[in-house]
Amino acid sequence: MKFTTLNKPENALLSFFLILKVVLSFALVNPAYELHRDEYLHLDLGSHLAAGYTSVPPLTGFLSALIKELGGGFFWVRLFPAVFGALTIFYSWKTVRLLKGGLLACSFVAVACLCSALLRLNTLYQPNSFDVLAWTAVFYHLIAHFETGKASQLYTMAIWAAVGFLNKYNIVFLGIGLLPALLLLPQRRVFVNRHLYLALLLALVLVLPNLIWQVYYNFPVVRHMLELSRSQLVHVNRTDFLTNQVLYFINSIVFLISGLVALACYRPFRRHRWVLLTYLFTMTVFCYFRAKDYYALGLYPVLLSFGALFLADKLNKRPVVTGAVLTASIGSLILFIPFLMPLWSPGKIVENQGRFQKIGLLRWEDGKDHQLPQDFADMQGWRELAKIADRAYALVPGRSAVLVRANNYGQAGAINYYSKFKSMNCLSYNADYLYWFDLSKPVKHLILIREAGEQDPRRNEEQRLFKRIRKIGSVQNTYAREYGTSVYLLESATTDINPRLREEIKEELHDD
Image 1: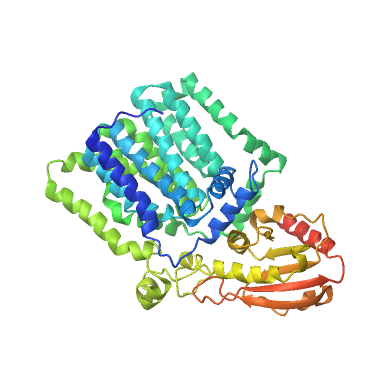
Image 2: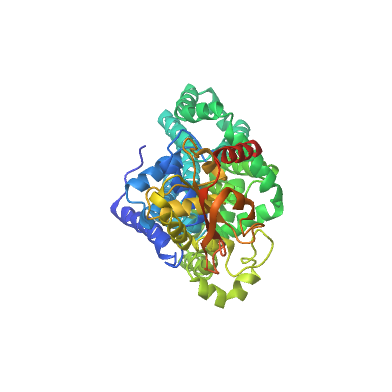
């Protein structure tokens, strides 16, 4: 890809914002917090490289393998999404420059991206950070093609779209929104450009291994989406979806509104109205399918870029108003940071519980209020759980013929991440772990991880199958969502339990 050459002042300013973005991703996370439950699953994918997974496309697995090669510590886990966030600012900056914006407009878009929910998103090792980056890059290169007429921009756009697809299938919705938007406007001329179809062919070649994998395994993504629709998306409230779009960018709302209004009404932006139509069509599709609110985040950096351009043009010679806009965005972010980021320790959040409760942050998916926001509670107790599992594993003679099985992917991934035993391989009848069982050898001992409130805490069901069952310990961190989760050691099976395990896995696969 080719960008315009930066002059020294611009290079220094851009470098400042990029470094600031990465630094904030570390500085605004209190050391009291561990990784999020989803991150442990994504990291475990790196130990099972494949052309696809049930939960995500293959890119996350390869990134996780790279993180593992680099040491796998918190620094590397958090660096990747932080860098993806910095590159999103970089592409937004270059969008502004492409459209002849000056340093004020560039600074505006950098501040707008920093003062948004992207700040939190880019601290989590999930496909979402790269997803937003891929959408932003696709918009940039398509705008660049329409501005310059260069076919190379179509090929680069196609590469970003393909890699974005290999990261998260969500980018398909961008394509669904782009198609009618372009067809309705003069940009429809792109559909008679042979380079567009050659670029799409290149994208197809890049994603083909994953498509073949999907066909071979009877399209797990369809089953995953149907299950997601039944269990989660059906509960999505469309009003909440739209409301949260505003809340995600409440600190930079002036830039967002300016971008939407300018694309609709500002004459210099008339040729870019396909961007606005793409936003409207894609949001309509998301609303129809009851998508999760963060699925739409990739639409916003380009809107913020146009908002920054418009405001910079109108405020160029009004330094007082310019300062007020920046102060409002940055100042409001500072006020919101404890609610947006895991900056305060759990104890301090409990001390200020009323402030969190007033804005509904303590309400979990069970509909009840708890001590911490659910997102923060999902970052507690994992190391403690792994230590208990290690104690159980150490009691197994020779640490052989043992199966470690958790209740959910967070438990399994966390135990594998923190365990001091390299031979520890905790699995679960949940997410991708369901496909990683190897029962070719007899299982004599079971280590079971079970959540608090389970119907059979005394393991009565397994009493007849093992000579001895003992509870090794449970998570005592009251702030953790896994509080009370217990570890049981089931020793010396009195019968061959492998057929039973195979049947359980078969039933889970059937239900899936």
